[in-house]
Length: 314
Image 1: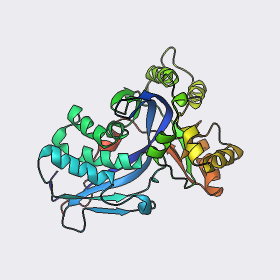
Image 2: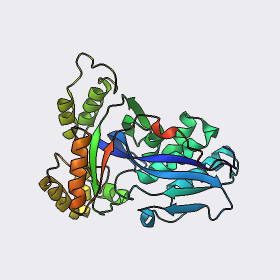
Image 3: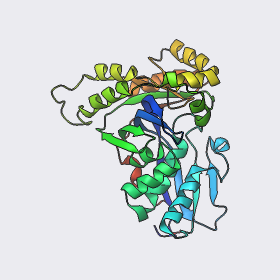
Image 4: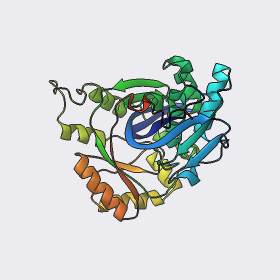
């Protein structure tokens, strides 16, 4: 991009529809099997010419929880790009934080992925995904977006057909540290990844949204039931570290949420709904009970990649 242009991109949150931990590598990183889904709750990330303030400006509802410049993933992504390209791009980063931090929604990873997508020097292939993986386990998926079967430490991705899914998402401020939750995880809470793998294969057989229903495809209620039964291996360690999560789960069940589940390492909860109307109703009920809550739809792969050169030439 020209350093005279202010480029604005959306950075969508993600949900873990299921998450299993299948082991631990010699380097200490856990091997995962997960199904990730992009949703339309999103931060806004802008790259602008440097020199108009500091290298990073963060605003928005959750700006206070975004951390300092040194730890901010969006700025780290820009510095990593510059190192890979061997050039000072002369850019600074602005982030509008609409996704709560340490909620399991992948907001920081989404911001980093937006920066990586904005600068075309590494293309969209292996070099870019390798750089993304070095920044964090969710960043490669956030570069690709959509619905995906994810393995390893986030670097193995199988894209799945886009399905029109609606969710209610709720967060009561119970921030969870991913590192601490994984540190609390016990080996007896690992599994073989079979449940998530079977669901991923089921999703792979579904027709993409807008296409005719294929023979053998599951009716929507059956598909929702299959996804609602998926495990999250991080629920027990997260709730041991933060017992408030047990109260939040009970509160959402009392509000009529079907099968509310933690996303990622927490502390946001989500439920897969029958459509937009139910998602809106359940989100409104959670908001009235004191949660921050959203009705969210799934996004197709590539949806967040379209830049918006807002402001044009500066």
